[in-house]
Image 1 (cartoon, rainbow, N blue to C red):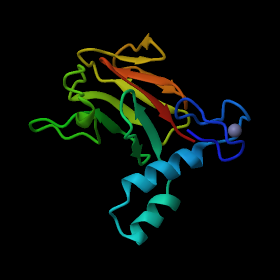
Image 2: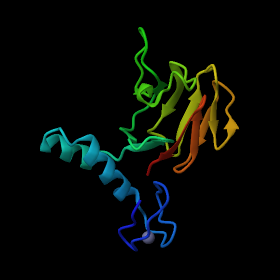
Image 3: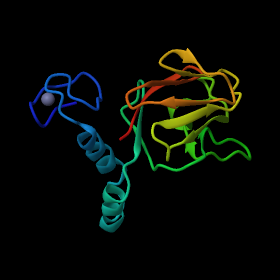
Image 4: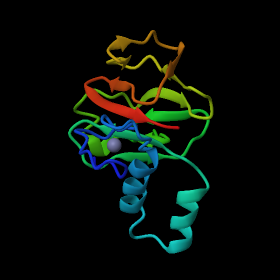
Length: 157
Ligand SMILES: [Zn+2]
């Protein structure tokens, strides 16, 4: 990801430039919102840009990050059968990677964000550390989040 401040080409999507330490959240967000909302009308695009600062999740191996509006009690997992979740990871091969339908709960209105593993089949990990189910853990921007074998990185401000 190209830093608009110093022009350094960072290896991955980062929140802070590796070279000059510039804050890259807005750069990251612009890229995503532009892509996500390309087909929507201008009013909706402007609302998307200015009324909230979403959480961004980069799933390893995918160039299509998720931008998620911050809400309390969000369920992260995958839609299947009669289960409908707030954040559906199906498009990232979540089923094959062992993500449970109701895998974890996220309170994104807290600072730092809090997540609770919902006794998922293959577990939730933050920076490689396995979470004890049904217990709240804080997750910081830039942390690695793993659900089963699906690995990603979370960014927020
Ligand atoms: Zn830079």
